[in-house]
Image 1 (cartoon, rainbow, N blue to C red):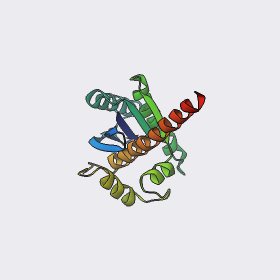
Image 2 (tube, rainbow, N blue to C red):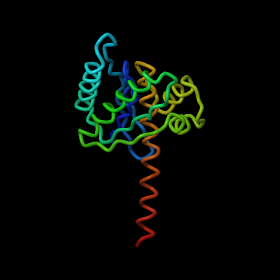
Image 3 (cartoon, one colour):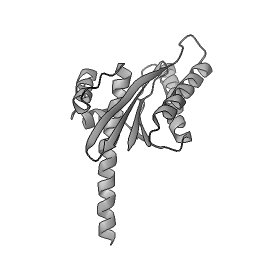
Length: 169
């Protein structure tokens, strides 16, 4: 199973790809899709769309997971981030992928064990869980954390579904 983790941002959307085989996680790739902050908003959203479409085409994930947006104090920034997040959700959905969403605290708790871990702790645990990983940007590290979170939770969901199936028999 190949998972694409996404950390939405208008300026930089981080992405990370890993393969999951049972309990085993294997790092595949990471990076970020960047938009031109001097361009108008519509152009920037197209840049995110096209960049993410290229990532999907190159790495052919089976599922995607996206970090949920937190609310900023600045409503304009929050709205722009929400628009970028819409593109980030749309691109894998258009490709026919299942798209899961996780809150930041949920991701941190899944990866680090503490819901209020800082970025340094998250990056350290991503490196430990995916040995040899040298992510290109902090956004890519966050995206890999999203993918790790999804890998853990989808496995739990599959186990629960299996137990329910056995109980129904």
